[in-house]
Length: 113
Length: 296
Image 1 (cartoon, rainbow over the protein chains, first blue to last red):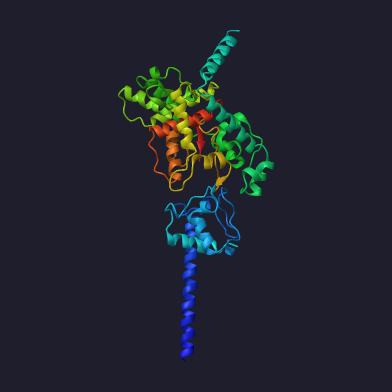
Image 2 (spheres, rainbow over the protein chains, first blue to last red; image 1 turned 60 degrees about the vertical axis):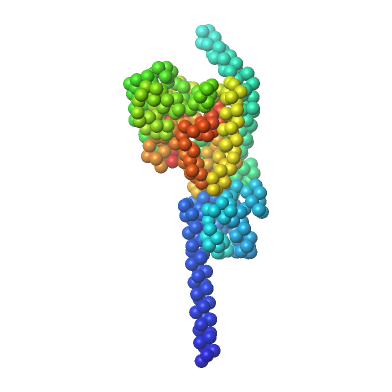
């Protein structure tokens, strides 16, 4: 009985994590698409994601699911650290997005195949 | 014969104004800019260099290649086939016709205006550098003329000023006038250099420079909109913008650019705005005046 309870608790917890993850992805997608927040869509298309008229200033995002989370976070926080001539804004360093928002964007980026 | 003499006199005076050496650097910049854009839009073959992230479909079907010189007066519609088609359709019934008529009336009936602007075909001659005053854009000149005549309600960005400018631009265009911004003193050259520096400086919380989008980025898209090139930017103002549902001056448009860069807009009439427009105007030197026009 105790064991079943434990498993049930774990299952609830696990689904909770999945649920929170899904929420974060959703929030990230919203930031990605919304002009007054991240507006990533202004410059980037994303592989396998249906977007309404993504721009072409930046590369089409693909294979990001294989990137470590930290690399994605750093890229959004300050792209100049890895590419000093990038035209991409430093969303974290310049205070456009806060820590939580960048984490949400990263969660969304991790879904891009 | 008489015409020929006048033409050679005009050419002579143009050469004289620009041969004094103060515009040497600016002329070099302008030529390099034109060469850059002509190369950029010369051929589909160069696309991987200049448009690395544009889709194959748009490169194949929505770009006009091989555009040169005067064609750049049209801004992004010089190379954006889809945008051009929409533009031409709207030009069947230009929404700014009333503005031109109103501008003509303002020109003829506003006290002092004719005295300030004896020749209305001068849209391409601004901005000017005036000793003691600094850079004077066409909007600055119109508003200060109104002020000198104690008239109220003339703004640098829209309304009566934009209407009058629409009349000036149209008259200049009909007469075949070209952009002819002059740098004829050390001070003027310094103002030009400051404007240029601002154009290439990253600004705002997005840290974009004007050039990010309008030199390197021209032809690439922000969402669905192809970015227009610096070469030819000032030729077609004032513009009727669908977003504004009305006419606006270059000053009004630049405020919007500042916002897009994530910056609190510089004031129209500020030295910053004037000197930026001086640089932009010089970069369009020699192109036909093509205003007013329609933009999204």
